[in-house]
Length: 233
Image (cartoon, rainbow, N blue to C red):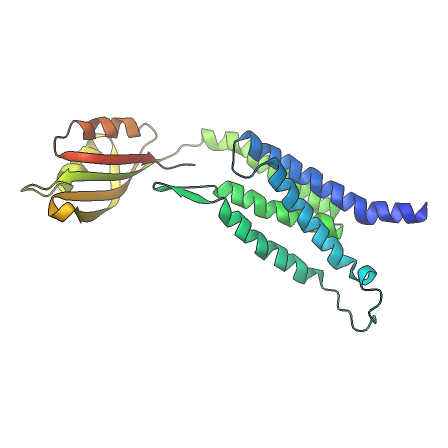
């Protein structure tokens, strides 16, 4: 019974704890329809825990190696895990138009890997506390975040027909009419000098919307085409 209890504490509990932690975080991401969901978070947490178990119990699988030769350094393994998981996190971050998506999911994957390392070395108190804190941030604080006053941010690109007057003053006036202010306007000459493209990021109060700006741009006869994208959370 003694051997089985040792196996349970040293091997089974870290693996089960990592799987449960990854599942809880992954369920929240899966429910939100994010690119990395239940299975991905479980696998990340399990992989981190298993690698840390191998590092901590290195003497067991290097039994034929002289003890004075073996150097156990779990910190090096943890560093390698958290560095390597960055490549996976980068895979869930993508750009759609002007907006960047997937940052929260990437952070949850990286944190899930960190939790897996804690379960792997047997820091159950810190690992469980970290799991609960992560769930609070992802679930509870999401509701708080929705209630906070926010600034509307729109990424805009507008193409004007080239005329006698430069279109920037007219564009600034139009943005001001809908309660938004450009943070800086970029200019590009297109199609052999026949069109001018203005690109910028507009900021305004919570009441401003992409729809109001789009309606105003549609009524401007000089506008050839435009793109208005609300900045994603």
